[in-house]
Image (cartoon, rainbow, N blue to C red; front, side, top):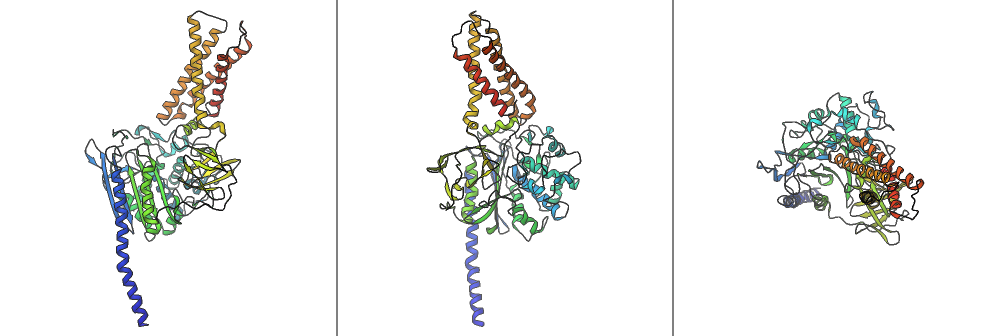
Length: 586
């Protein structure tokens, strides 16, 4: 027995001596690597400023600022003192608030939220639960209008904004992951209704202050902390819009406060605010489109690296770009934010480097035995887009909303130059991560490792066709209008000239007005506010096209020789009217 005890004590001493330096080396390595990466991404030609915090084993290993938070006034970015806008990372606070009410027995995560809402709240097409709101499975289409405003005076109370900007439900709840800013705002409003308290104030009292996050707030106007200015890639200071549906992305926080937040999330013994079980439910696999994917927790993405799970969340506003990642097996958290646009792959590379150091470098899965039963080639639209409003056009204008897969089952499939590797039944490994393809309601859907999914489009809805049709219409109308004006000036008048001239002029002016309305609507985050005017000009184009077509067919000119230009002009008008119908303008 004594011999056994002596061996045990010797082994214990060996591991205590050798293990501590290894742990310290690991902490130092991740601190140095990430610090150097973020430092190289800040400065002239890069981001104007950035913040980074790293926690490991309950300790804050790094809380650092880089560059400027306000260059004009000489205010440096400081990890403890300057706040950055953290975008959709704000959504994680909504999940915490909901879990507080759930553990208190005041909120049932699987009950229809209508029992908590005011009686005058609009009736949804399908009943929705808090569980579905927090997993982005409530079925809402995306709606940009009402999400943000240019002036703080234009922001609205949450009770008003969730009513006014209610989007359509295009999927049956609980079936499809469709990222939804509105869904999270609605979840926050449920919290307001239950607590009879402003959501921003509730979070401050029940989440931020108990966790010591004194420099974090949802308030638009506050004196809690100095917030970094936003900057353009050129280095010029610019303006940042204010989030109107504010719980989905308006929080500001410091790297220091987010370090405290990560420490709390990773420590199961820290029962401030939430019990260990309630915190575990936030990160548990709450929904997945497929068994091959880790799925999502409550607002958090679940991802794997060499069979180890980690959680991450991306937050982006117009000019601030944020990432947060938790690696529970290594008790490590990483938070970073930039006040200037940087390419997504550069920011993601920081998190990927952390995953490399903690879980080992990623190895692409080897080809599996599953069969490819679906032809996945074609164009896909992000389900995080509009389906039933004129904002549908944004899926063709906003980067990342469309995806093209080329190839065939015989030659293999590609996304850009990345060859997809079949690793299971209609499951592929790619630079985007694991992709799962499946048929739902006669539509081929692509599920990813995050809350983003795509739907395959018919060939005629491809980007270049949809963007080419209005351009073609404009060119042909302009050409025809010039021809009619020249004929009029040369006094080569015929019976049909004045009518055709008027029709082409109405088409041209209405098209220009339509383009201006779309541009203004996109620039002010309020495209649907101009929907009525867009419809009016759309109908003017339709009436002009119909009038021109009828006149061309039934009022025959004296000269019966074939003239191709009027035929092409009428055909382009028909196609453009179909285009306006498809984009919900008519």
